[in-house]
Structure formats: C-alpha cells, structure tokens
Image (cartoon, helix red, strand yellow):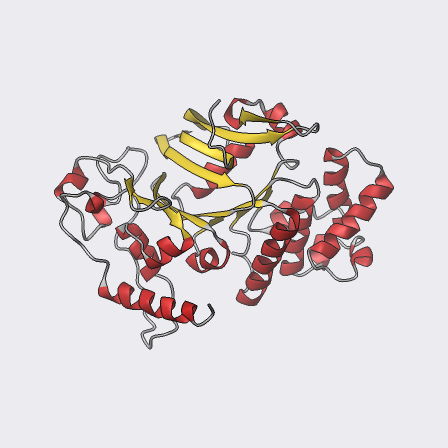
Length: 361
C-alpha cells in the first residue's frame, strides 16, 4: 500500500454519499489530503461543505446512511515494538477501529463540550475511563495520570476538580476537560472539530493557545475543522479550502492568506471582519452552495463566481500547480485563461496584513 513517505495520515480520492428520503447526497467528492508528523492542517469552508464528514470517515463516525463509494484513508500505524505499517482505515471493521485507532491513535475534540461529557459522571472518572480503556494500568496510576492531564490543560486545583461534575465548570473549563480526555491515551493525531465555536472570543484564544502548547509538548499532528479563517491564521501550517464536497485550494498558511488563487477563497477572506477600516458592513459570497442531491456539471462554484468562464459550465477544473505546496482548482489558472486579479479591496486588505505581520518579524 503506497503512501507519501512523510505523511502520517493520507486521504486518497475519498468519495462518500448519504442515502436520504429525497435521494442520494454526494457529500464528499474525491478528497485528497495529507497530514505530516507534528504538523497542523486546517480544513476550512462554509457549513455543509463536507469538512466534518471527511474526518469522521477516518474514525468510523459516519452515520448509518453513509456509503463510502471509493478511496482510501491511509494511516501510518506504529506498533508496540516500534515497527510501522500502513493501514487503510476504510477497510477496518468498527471493532478494529475501536480497538486500535479511535481514542488511542486518533482522538477528536468536538465543538460542544456538554454533548461530549457525561453529566452523571465526575470529570475525573471520565478521564480515567479513557486511560483504563487504552492503557495497561491500574486504577491508582490512571487517577494520577488524570490529575496530570488536568494540570497539562491548565485546570487549577486539579486534585479537587477531579470530583466535579461537568455542570460545575465553565464552558472554557469543560472544553479543557474534553481535551484532557482526548489526550488520555497519548494519540498521534488530534482532530479538532470547531473546538472554540461555542466559546467567547477571550476563551477561544486561550483554548487555541492550549492546543498549540500541548501539540508541541506531545509531538501531535493536528487537524482543525473550522469555518473561521481567523482561527486558521493562528494555528495552521497548511490550509485546505473545501467547497461542495471537494478541496478546491490547498497551500501553506501564507499562500492561502497572502496569495489566494481561487475566487471562493477570495470570497472567504473578504468576508472576514476587518478592524482596519471604518466600514462595518460584512462582505458575503452571493448565492448558496449547490444541492448535492444532483452532482454539479462543471465547476460547482460557477453560479456564485463573478469571474466564471464559459468552460466552468461544462467541465470541472483540475488542480493547477501554483508552487510545490500550492494548488487550486480554477480554470483561471489555465495558460489560455484571461488574466484576472483578485478584487482591489482584498488586495488592499492583504497588503495591510502583510505590513502588520512584518512588524513582528
């Protein structure tokens, strides 16, 4: 089974659909994505673009009406004796996933901690449960490790907090507990699905810093799922922009924020609040994402794209190479396409952001 030698997790042409009363929804359409050891990759896009479905496929959390039509999700599994082998997560049974992958190798942090925590159990017991499930250890050692994890995620008076129930903690503290539970089995990969959406801005910043700090200490690889480009700018090494079930632009964080090539990415960046201007109006991308009950003909973004070409109505664009790390699926990058610049307002905004960033170099 061939795999990028640097990758720890690799999605290869993953295609997923869902059976519904209205018909078959083609939710994920040929997704390719790489995650390397110690790196942070963000998947960004509007609600319904397929971000969460993509990563849930890796840990067997898809709904019962899902069908994996094709593709592979390759994981570099390190055995207890130090050897490595590549496994296709889509070929493992749910029992195999639970035993060897979920929680122990790949852990998830969801956006609402109250739905992730059991209100009838103390937080100490919930953290210990994960340790006892995945580690060969006794109850006393598990309790000591649970206290360590609470301290690691910045919860003061950890020994006393072990006895607390979720409702006795603030939203930010609950999310720290969820992160502690995710770390209980020393995973290789942490998947964060909108981990700060339910929190206020100040607490968001603290949680993002916490995850970054824990990542560096434990050598984790991290995938962020978010619609918030502000979060992406703070945490990501690489960014995958997703639209209508496909990744339509990928690059390192500077390429996506300073040199975006896809008109959809231009729209996402333009929609970010800008504190440097007096204009308090928020930009938006006109129109709505396509109904994936019917697979789009041509480029799915064409009906919302002010720069669409005639070919966009007929053919889905391939990924065009911009640099060794930057690719975008837009016909505007074809050698015969007319030269189109990003909107002047976005150019000015990017220039301001670059100037501000240079002050800290």
